[in-house]
Image (cartoon, rainbow, N blue to C red):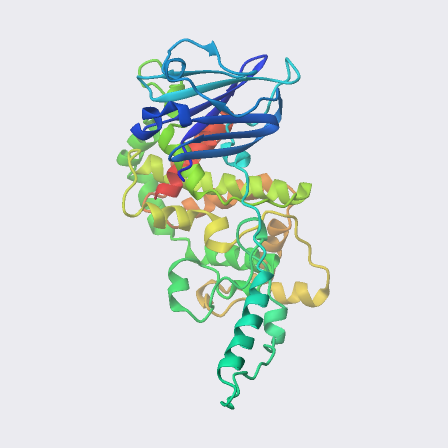
Length: 424
């Protein structure tokens, strides 16, 4: 069965489910279309489409309905069955189902998060497989009573080393472990942090800041500072969602289209996500912001058309992607940990100076900052002045303004950017 492209809308008294139907087989036999809803459950079936949703609020109950062919193809809204009204738009190939809310006037929130409403498949239990194996074994013994063969295999429990047990978590929301084979050289091309499973959040952050200081190229930065004619054009150009003539927002450019919704349906994991605490939720929001900053930097510097280098640019500029940064407050709880953090790394001997202790101390104070949004923003701007082709302060600030603009436009604009990044 195929999950159709769909979206949700509402008015004061009704929840509206709009399903796109492009398969002619569905419309050729409308009598086989079934629509059912009760409380917070909605089911649509019309071969080859099947859609089952867990609705965001309660709706009036109904029973399975076999649509009448004439009424299904009507363009005007009409009552069909019990508490169900639907119409079909022939031009847009959309079936619009209008369901009365149980509590009239109730507002259903987050309707654009369509992936949250897809029902998760039930877990399958395989307890009967044991019985089948036992029966098969008995039958084999009856058929081969004269044979004396040991079919059993020696079984040993895997030995877990202390290194495996002591793994650190990393990745988005700091929720993964044992993902990478740290001996695989291909990992070095994907991320900047080495052996992430052996490094805490504090260690990764400090190592990232040290690496950034060592990688800063003064000559490249000064060259882009004084020879900035091309960069000035990049900075002045309006993004695709702003009309150049009126300088006003083109809202339709930031709305999700059918392709975007289909990508959400296909790619979003259908699983229950854990309920994070407030600190973790704030860290996730900041991680999304640094990813968006990297995406918007690449978008602006490529004339709003991504290139083959876009994936590298986004990965390099985002601390979350390249260093598994997790934006939570960190503190050094022991003297040993503090002394270990201020050791100068041998990989950057050219940066060792007589005042290196004060330098490292300031670095630690910066890493321990309580203003995490500021720390995130500074980290993004730092990396935009160190790694990409164009390294210019005005450009970095313009991208920061683009980020603020996208955040102010709301969830649809954010999802549009994240889906654009996913295409890359």
